[in-house]
Length: 324
Image (cartoon, rainbow, N blue to C red; front, side):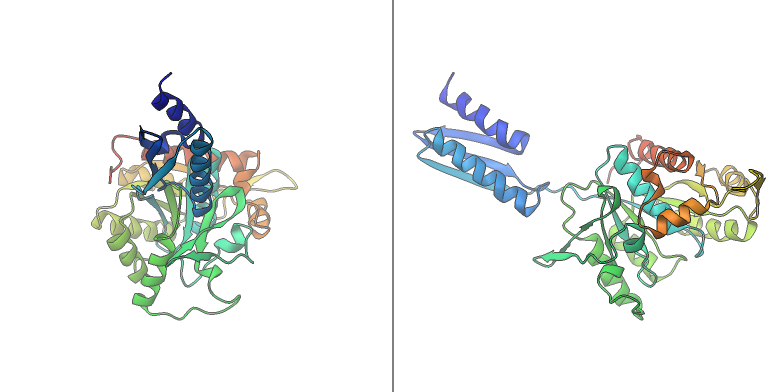
């Protein structure tokens, strides 16, 4: 075994493919270390391990050049044309379900004026730290890192900002230290105003998931949201129907207070995929208020979120999805 081979095995055992360009010359060892997918603590630890291991193996000097060829995370917007249809709950559980499916995923609460993700993610008392001028996401339920304006404002404080200020705040949440996160679910505010325009213009989502309840008025607003993303040339991943039927816990009878099948019919009419439906179930409300997303469970509700997540993942990985 040559000296280069010996050091190669040693370096690979510590840093894997992140260490490249290894050279050994008269006791001087040099290499490049890609730190773009590492946190600061990980970088410091791996760099120290590499240096110590090489010195113990006989290196007279060790030079480690740090590189950061970071790949920007892909943004998936979850949107609706109106409030009160369950968009934030879907965003939370979609992110958790994608994480459970093995994706490297994060969550941004872009609903600047009504942030709810800290409660939904079970981290109401958490506050993000900063490194340099960038925020470090907080770990939430299901080991999903997330950021929300609700973490930066005082509890119960009304956020009365004009569009440009809100847009700048959103940029701070998106342009954070996401580390190994590859997909970011963005919980959009309802409507098609300044925040949505800022998001699309500056952070160009890879695609959008639209959520609606079954009744006609909600579908009209969802159709407007679809038109908004179409105009901005953001692909529609599909439509989700929320509050789709209620099973009485006492008699087991199914009722449909908001109608049924409207979103699926609208998806067919609009020529977009139908991703699935979520029932109107008190367990979703109880789990959400407790900061334990129902996607973490094993019942039919968790399976419904898992099915939607699988559709989204398949779309992201498909040839028809944008590559940049």
